[in-house]
Length: 288
Image (cartoon, rainbow, N blue to C red):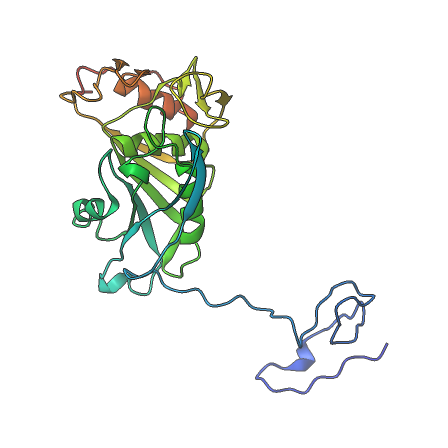
């Protein structure tokens, strides 16, 4: 085999470089040739298209179809977006907080509630079908976990998104969906989940095990029927008030048709899935 010849067009000294040739091929390689590569430089792109920046005016389309009460339903989730304007962040990849509203709420209001607290995050706030999230007893049976999975995937395609720092913040019914996401979604880009004003419930957690529904959600073990170990490592924060009369801090049976864990015990069970081996921290009415 002849030794390859170079024409020097750089500052490198070719005399100091050693080239070992182990095979020879003829380029271009047309699709279907004996090489089996199927690569034809005249027709095959060898670079990915440039990523676009997520902006306040961007459109994120996620549409889901499901059957509810025997009737097919199709819903496109409205997405409110706020991108920070801090000058030092303009050319950087920025963390994202997905905001999940409470029952009766909407995404636009969540942006208004959080924009003064998370100025260094991109905020994405979807609105659930019937302004609610599908966890157990709700009237909506929309595939909201699939929506979150699709949303995370789409967010990773933007050039100004830090795809290792995608977070979920949920309030009340939105916190219940965030709890579902903690157990069900294994995407490593989802690094933090914060829940406000709700805790895990039986049958989502029972007998020292977390469960997810194999099909449609409901309030019994017949729906939450598949044991699941949550992904780790992941950070989890729960905020709950002792004066909450809707989802009591102390947990117990509820008119929703299931029983909530006590708030401190709920977080303790999460901590154990992340490798915590100590005992539960003593809790005197929310004071540790």
